[in-house]
Image 1 (tube, rainbow, N blue to C red):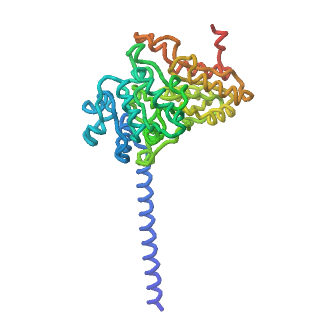
Image 2: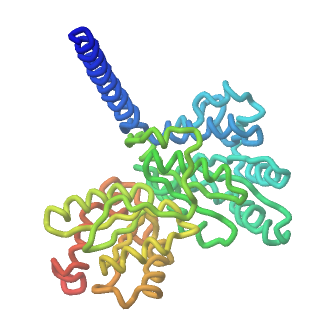
Image 3: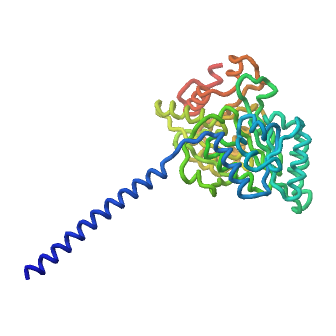
Length: 375
């Protein structure tokens, strides 16, 4: 009897020890999962580079061409290491002739390849705008869907620092006005990776507008973002910060400014919802209007010229679809309606600043003197 009892007690102890051991194993595994899914930091430059690398590796039809993309590894080092890995047949250094190599890229896309055409700055795309608009954007429609043009036009867009009027324009509104094109503007490293992958895989021409000043910025990225299968949907905005008092829409570098403005506004009791547009064409009108119907106020932010801009299109959409929900006039924050000055002090005045967004949000919430009264 005593021996049987000892056996039962021994078995119970063994089970208890085994249970404790399993619990420790589970805890360790849980901690490991938590660590592996924790956000890591990645620069926008590296996010773009990794997206190019992975898509070129996955599809032999993908190739990169442009000025100094090969031997020099890109003016901003976006194509670093790609020439060595894929060779000169898939990473092509071109002469300084945007019209020439853009036309070659469009022709290659006609025949089923997937070119990525890099402009050293999108200001130089004006040399090739005939191929972008007339050759790439319109061919699918004019051929009754028989010709697909899977091509990406990418490079830095908008104001940088001290580069003058001819190198500082934002082309988002220019290209978004053209049917047949898709226009994407990434802000974070997540945007850069996910949207560039989506652009390369898309069957239609995509204008991919990066920002020179964001290349060296680092953003947290999850394990999901780092996965080679990661891809973001084209035409879907992201709510970067939820709020209930005022909606602020922005894209590219201005998303960061909008988020900084939202932090300042929060300290003054104003809850701002910040929408990262990501896609300019197609525009996620449903997300924008749903937000405005919640907050009842709208501020749009962009670096480009105010007339016929992205903000003007967003304001029109809200007035058409959600006018009855507005408790204040919509307001646009944009670049000054002048060519970009070269002097640093004037350049700062020509592009939107965080304080401009804060003041606009306060006006919309009737927390400051109206603009007309202050003039």
